[in-house]
Image 1 (cartoon, rainbow, N blue to C red):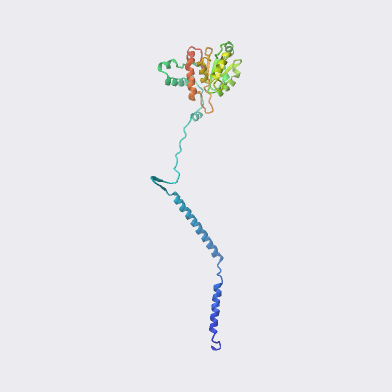
Image 2 (cartoon, rainbow, N blue to C red):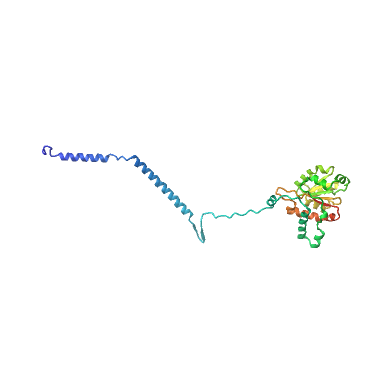
Length: 291
């Protein structure tokens, strides 16, 4: 039987096996779809891990102190700033306090302090404001007209008897020109036929005011203490007929300030009082009112 197969049987078997091996090698190896997906996920995780590590490294390098020659190293982090406490202004204090009507003691305290800073002891005694210098003060229930009717109930008779030029029967002192105009509007129900004059510096030269005062009879003057003092000093406004000096005491401006909360106005009022007003008050010719 061995001879029947021939001499080349073994060669045929070797060739066929070799060809089969080469065919197997040439065929592509098919991977399972699940294993491919797992590899993609692993690559993605590695990539994200590398990016995170790079970012962390960059932040660490940035936060490191930078060396400077001759100076201490400083970090890039911003220093913490201390918060400063906001100081209370006059407006804040006045807004928190309840409004109180003015009284003679209030003006006396302000005027006494002014005298202490500028005059000797003997001069202070001569310029002292006595309680008898004051008339009734506004208790915050009056309008300007009703208050003036209370302190001068015989106004109609007084204004008819007044005939002197350059001299008013009543002076109303306020903090600004705008406030003066507002007060003049409030006088409608009180003044009657009386002539009211503006006595402030805004848009009006003092020479023009002096000429206006000399032309005719005026009954009520409304203005600022600085301009009224200047007119008295220049003899443009006389005090012979003056009977009432009314201070716009209880009114507050937009910043909640009164007459005596503004240093310039406070000084001007004190100068006005020390001119001839106090001497007239001593002679019982002038009364001071706080509206």
